[in-house]
Length: 479
Picture 1 (cartoon, rainbow, N blue to C red):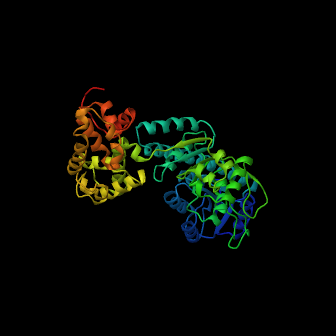
Picture 2 (cartoon, rainbow, N blue to C red):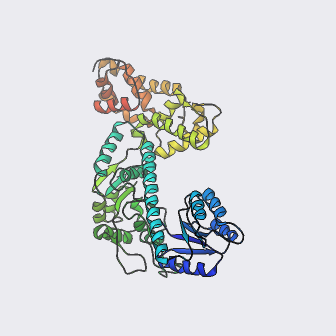
Picture 3 (cartoon, rainbow, N blue to C red):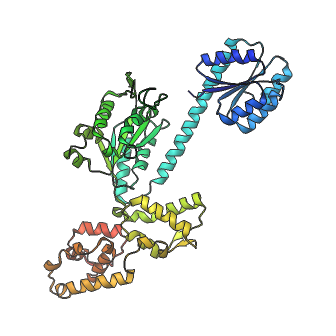
């Protein structure tokens, strides 16, 4: 209900009593003030949806108080009351921005009609605000999902398929790959846009509290339950609930979640009444749920209920060509949020960032760029701004060292065209040496990708993918 709390300001006790009874009968919470000073105090302490104010009060004119409310609480609807039904008062009240104007003694039925009208307008305004918020969140969500790589293109295709229906979605991927962003994209591209999106990290809530977080509880359900609490499922009714780190949910609660999915109803802790819910479930995990099922720590039936259409997010190291786009996005984001003045990243620094394996994925990259932007002394980020992402040896030394190793292996083999002895060379080097390794082998084979793939001991299509991913421009040579 958009209209919930009402302030009544009148110096006549009988008027305050009558209005309090009438408004409470409509399910509204009512606060009373006998003068302007007390009204101001209540306005500082509480949020109101509607105020009924007498024009004549001992310490302040109701019209002057209306001006204050209009300036300080522009969304608050105000109904003016007066015992003098003059045209001047009515015109002046409406001219100053009053929602309506009633004269004393007033008919309670007429007052009920005015309140009902205010209720409908408040509901409409709340719906408009919710839709505006949904559109804003949708735009922010879409702008935050960055990437043109082939793995991300596959993710976008799956997003298009799942968003058109109410199918349950399971998002998998390492920590920091952006699973919540994808969950929000699922919601904001579905028919539930404009309805609530409620997220809960199952790993962040102690097991003994997780049930009440999900389903709520009744007053007196346990020690400390001094009032009823609405759980996440009820908060998300009509919309989407995102259950992050679902693999950390205890087994006994998994059984209750399975029942919620099947029956489409929940029961608050300490309650005995089933509550119907209409909620789409999007779950996410960084664990291998199939292995969890094998270990008997995750229910098989729940796994199949959740895994109707899975979306697997690639780690950042498998979509390195997206790193320059992400770096640019995070630089602009840091400038907007923290007032940094960084314009770009140097070529050497970017190459360093692309080479780094990013075990913390996009979250680690964002934190790294944010820190560099705040600490950098110039407008261009340098390689020195990323000490933790540097390799153990400088790039040229890295190339020289690797080339020396390769020369030893290839000295006779390339001349004899005998590659049997070195067909596992790819497995002999560390991940961060992958880029210079491929560059050197392509140089040695004069751009012959077939020969290079054989020497590296990898599939030719794999080599092509890595050339594209790592941004390597090979010399033109025989295929």
